[in-house]
Amino acid sequence: MGAAEAPTAGAVERSAIRKVSIRLVPFVALMFFVNYLDRTAISFAEPNGMGDDLALTAAQFGFASGIFFLGYIVLEVPSNMALHRFGARRWLARIMISWGVVSLLFTWVQSSEQLYVLRFMLGVAEAGFFPGAILFLSQWVPSQHRAKILGLFYLAQPLTTVIGAPLAGWLISHHGLFGLEGWRVMFLFVSLPAILLGIAARFVLVDRPEDAKWLDRDEKNWLTRALAAENAGKTGNTSRHHAKGDLRRALTSSRVWVLSLVYFGFVYGLYALAFFLPTIIDGFQEQFGTEFSVMDKAWITAIPYLPAAVVLFFWTRHANRVGTRTWHIAGPAVVGGISVPLALWTGSPAATVAVITITACAIFAALPVFWTVPSRFLTGAAAAAGIALINTMGNVAGFASGYVTGWLRDLTGSYVVPLYLVGFFMLLSAVLITGIATRTKDPRTVTAPVGDTPEVRS
Image 1: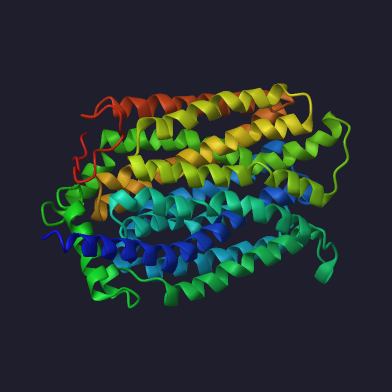
Image 2: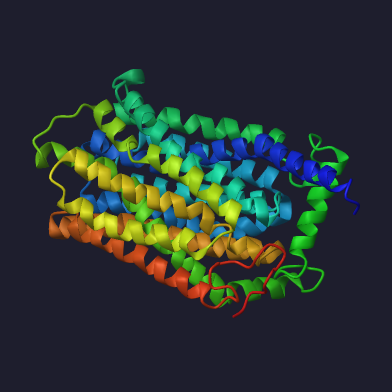
């Protein structure tokens, strides 16, 4: 390539990534926003009427929160394999419509047993969405741009609480609308967007760069060549290996399983906060002698997540600029693991929320950077299976964090032991990701440099 052509090639690359960032990422992030709101809406409902109406103990609420993940686990890997076969456009649309219908049924739940069944079915309906979205975006951008793209996508998760908590509080305040309790009104209105977005996904999403009408010929060619060059040599490249063999290698890879345990620690902390923070805030009224309205509690719940979104944005930008380093993942894990227990010993609601904010910032800084790692050495069917397996462990953590936190709260009468357990799992994640780094040629980085695509080693 001549010197005069280099700037043109760079311009094509920038233009292609910019169009993907504008055309695909916001829509997929909006899907994630609604997805996360639907799965965590129960956390807003419990302290605002549902717990009393259904006579739920902390353990029962924790089980109802966590059983969602058992349903998700049942179909996660098959769902991601189906997405790989049928394409993201059709499969993600199917997932959204089915979970929207199930979520709508929460409006009329009458007992804890019905709540358990619906939460399990919600997990079955949503199975494969998150790893499918990660896989879809990873198939659109080369690795050197992936931290930025996944960071933009992941912004939807903390922003779901920043926007969703006040929205949920506002909906709950409309007690009596259509003759429904406030928490039922919330379930009714947070479910409908999933169905509408599922229908829209059939028209907005595009499975492959070469099919995108909004990319010009040069942009399509650059993306196709860059992704093909990166995929060459990875586990899952069907030109070199049979797909079933690659699937087996991904599922038996020690690296995939260690990454699964790393992810377990982060997700355990994520959902312990997501499901129980509104209940902990509700407990401030008795613990500190304060009084909060429904909207007050909603706004307080949102506080930790706005700084978390800001930290996530700049942390992933830095990782994208310098390359994913061990400390981009291990550092936040250590901060989160230490800060969680500190929240137990503060003397005021403001101090408690401040410490929890640090924990939330740590979790959300690490998660999108973490997801750049598996796609660096997996592709094709192996990527679908490996990413789904890692996320399955996250769903195990989601179930465990909900059920164990509630059970320990009932057993001990406080959240001291449950939050210490959160800290332990996050510190374990830091140890494990550091251990992976010591096995690479460059101990500073979790993944190989751009252009070097190491095989999965069992």
